[in-house]
Length: 359
Image (cartoon, rainbow, N blue to C red):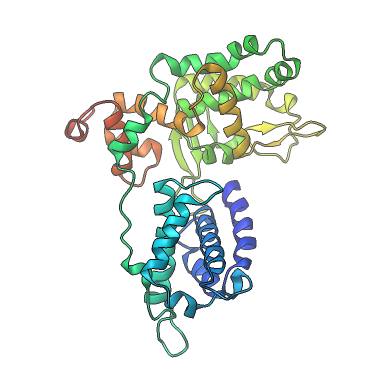
């Protein structure tokens, strides 16, 4: 199991203990098909829903583990409408339409399982009435809409190289009066540039970068072996190619990885961090990489830039030279529908993208 999945599985096992028995049964049913990360999001969605049920007096349970199937059976349409309104207007921050749609979709999955798949001892469905079957969940993010939101918010053409160069040199000039920031940058600039370059020259997801080990790199063939999203075979790593630019930046980082980050022999992680007061480096976290990119992006004059937008930047650039099928494979998308975003971003028609063949 890769590092991120292992971390999420531990959190999932802990979180599910606060759920009713039928949710625990549903999670066990889904474990072979869905990643721990996805199921963890499901459980968080159920936690929000059950807390709301109890707060509204629709469940008499003293805690979420005591919510009953009977309380779910008697829910009415007006209750579901009220919950949707709660999600979009709750005080601690309204959810986007996409998030609301996802939360309702996870509820539909649970209710479907309880009413159509799970059985009691007499072979009757656990849930006799499924209110969520009446809820229509419209598709929110169409490729064309997603592309419109990304316009002007990704790196294009020369900016890809400029951003890597800024991490290596430009940032230091901008923070030269801040000794602490300057020291941290001098320590980590090669590593940070290498991570950024790798994403901008391969399109890896941040979770895939976090999970990389030193022996996953084949420098001669400019190839990485990564655990891809949606692949439930824990033993298989997918080969992913990267460009020459990333090879040079990786080599610069690898030359100093062991000494600068005091890498212990047992540590296999490619990208390390050395926390203050620590005698040994350890694997960088997803959050640390995300914060690192945001830090540089703000100074670079692209405050909206994130790790995932670096992936979008690569994909858009890659699609300009390749067809939709090669782009899909490089990014690890489940279908070309997701990859259509880059056809719209590059102002190509879908018919041109699909019909074109490369030699």
